[in-house]
Length: 171
Image (tube, rainbow, N blue to C red; front, side):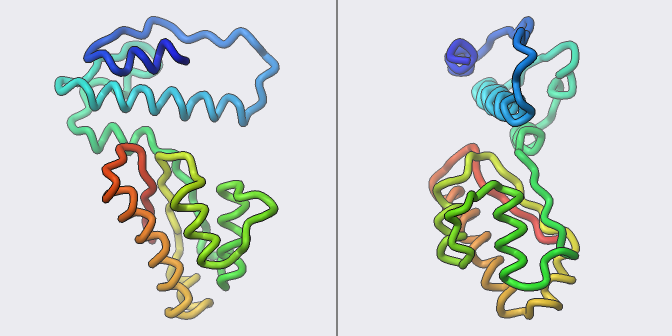
């Protein structure tokens, strides 16, 4: 992985093959490896104005028109089902499970800010589907307070100029 990270700093490089010889990797380890690899690819794409050309199974990255298109491709997307979120308590429970906040998560808006602003590996895209169902069930004030924390996190990452950042959509 260090060689790939070093290669990302060079304006152009070629990746011939990546082989995992161990069959004892857990699904979580494979997903973490994939996320790190995507991050390296995005950094390499950002460092080369004309883009990179990939062949084989990752050919979908070739000829992409903008850096934002490349970044969307690499985000770790997480869907939060509004039909399961009927209260602030439901929101914290569902999001904690979705993003693996662990047993010590405080289940309140301050704890949410702490986790989102500092503890999550980026890039991440949180998509809150059927959010109107959540808003209707929990009330506009509670819903807006949660969205305010999501927006504050998004703004923080933008203000810091991070290329790997938190983003969200409320659908």
